[in-house]
Image (cartoon, rainbow over the protein chains, first blue to last red):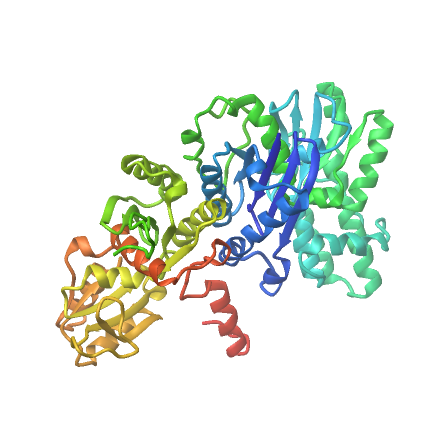
Length: 343
Length: 260
């Protein structure tokens, strides 16, 4: 089965072709970073306009690179939330028109489920139950997956997402946009022990995250500091370690408690070098297999949507009439639900 | 009107998509006229209902999607999100069917609807600072200037992104009164005029204040027969206004960092 995956949830326009949910044939991502850089953040209206400009070129290229025609496609999977509503509407609208005219079934995919399924693109698949750490500019969640499409959220952030605080602190220090990857590279050269960021205590919750406190502290440290390159490096290193320590802190206990047999990390922050190293160490210590997607599948992409769409379609979609599929709606704040429970 | 051809049976078939305002509409048009027209006035349902609505239209008339020669899409000015929903769906459909798109200027649809009025102002957009306004006057029958529109109007003020207060001031100072106002802000704008003591600014009849898909389709068919169409990949809305973020940034740059 050939799946065309489409994601326009934020500021990347992506189309990809995947075979049977595992084999990546093409993955085209048209980044809008340059457009938004001068505003210091993503401008929803500009993002939506650009999605519409580049969707057909991205889709044509994805088909061409995969060496297939639109008429070969068996399923179209598209992100319908969460994300920027105006952006989601473009991808979903395009997918609907395409699916109707090409007479191909259409399936909706939750963006977080997509990130999780980036780890299912490959030869070896995570074994269930799998503990997923999904970390991006919009999300920081620990999600247990007992089988395909069964999601239980065990921990989430109370305030900012990890990727969001990386970007904000990077912007304040005067790094590029989006700042997370710049901060990561700067931190590689710093001493994380010079300015330590201890774990926050979150009242009433055992596993939840909170990143707004350490973000504020980093901003205050920067204001008070001498702004030399060495200081910036050490601040970046200490702050990065603080975020990563917190992200991995509940993992050991949760793996024991849930009996998880694999640990999988996904989302844009999964490209963070320290998070990759530390999670490797942790997985080795716990003697559990670790799954982290290659960098290009950490950030938003259509391939992960195609992969998730494939499994979801097997579980829920194949008997649903196309007319129902075409009534698909988008939601900026869509909640993650196990497949089969949202019908 | 028939497409050139020996058989004489080939006709052009157009699917019209109207999403520029809170009115969601689809129509099927061929050389016999408007064969089918469905409209719903309800905000926030366009994305969900557009495809099912045009499928219903196609089934009602008995056309297959492959039978279509062209899609006609309301190109703006209008709601940014609304326009994009129409274009995104039309792009997907036209790309898969390999059919062209006629970008029909939304204000031409208003004018065709309001052809019986001697002078027509269009005020699109309900937020006063985010309106697009235009002014037209019925042309003398023999005149055929460059600014002549499809519906026999002369363009006195082309579609312009301007605060509706300023447009009202402009109207108050011109001899172009009385004027009949259409557009989704027609009623609101006419009230503003009344409150400002400017006489002769009145809304057109209620049923003419939103663009309808049948008229859109008729203009789209004309454009198709003229060859005035684009590929799906270059079919984009004409927004007429920049995003608010760009406006603010430009203002900042102009005033050396001060934003008012």
